[in-house]
Length: 504
Image (cartoon, rainbow, N blue to C red):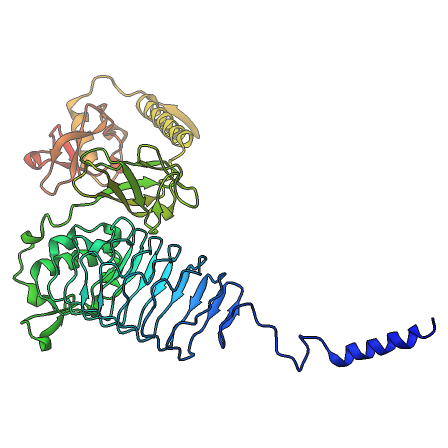
């Protein structure tokens, strides 16, 4: 048994000397079926910048994100995506593709994003994009597109964002959007093309959320009055696509390329435009005011009952039953939208989308919701208590003023003297003179008379300068005029003995 010890030591030395497959001197183990020079990491396959003229023949079946950009691909074989059942993202930008062809995306039913930007595509046929029923974002900018088939996007039922900028399109149908569904489309980029004439009624009929994501800048548009008024209205409403690129919106003043002027900076060209022609282009949105913390209910008003109703929130979220992702907005069974606790995030434009067999076309209804904080209500107890206390104090002062006899001090003691009940003419004259005098009377006999009056506002009587006059009634005390500045009315200003005195 002693020979086993040297044998074990020898085996250990052989293992240490030979190393492991992952040690230095051995190439790392490559993932199964990963193309040469490509990078494979879990469900990611990147073959970018390798100068490939053809798609690698063997692609890992677990690939969910495939990047073939920045190569020299010129053609795509029909059915080449059949092994990639998990594919969700496909990058084909910066290649040399000049055409697609039928069946190229036949096996890409789960694809969500397709990047075909910066290629040499000149047209899109009716069946070039077949099989992309789940596609949400399509990038076609920076190509050479001149023609789009009338139904080029017919099968893209879930498409939200379409980028067609930097192409050579001279026309685009906003009536049917070349087969697109306006219910889901949120972004349509047509900037930097050759669009010269655009149907203004078709633009005005688009849903509000699509107008907010419709980019038309840097096109040779004609300086049409109705188009200018429509874009001006969008700019005033703060629609993002017009507001962010206001300087890039130009038009041809004289149908000459050199006569480009900016829509929103050269308004003199449109001075003779009649704003009456723009009336009725857009259906006015309905403005609603809601208070923070209160509830709000929005109804989708359509001409006939709709089969399917969805909403678009101010955050561009498509709302279906049961409601929003955060749970603050609910879509009820009748299609109405309910917000139980209104917050600032709910301010903005809500758009209802209604479809159905009885509707002649898809109908929309817009609500512009403004959210305000409720005004703090005054404390009822404090207000009523203050009012009651003021009335009580005022009543006590009036009673004291009316019934407490005046006192004068004699020999360091107060001796009260009652006024005579029947005034004499001499007393009346002395009282009136004391009213108009700035110095107090010296003799006790010149004390004010017994007439007592109460000042009240006489409704309906105003002098020339619009100030309300104070009329003197029969119970006001004329004995102490220092607190009031009385003035005789204009009709009897020269009569000192006039009975009606007015204050200003």
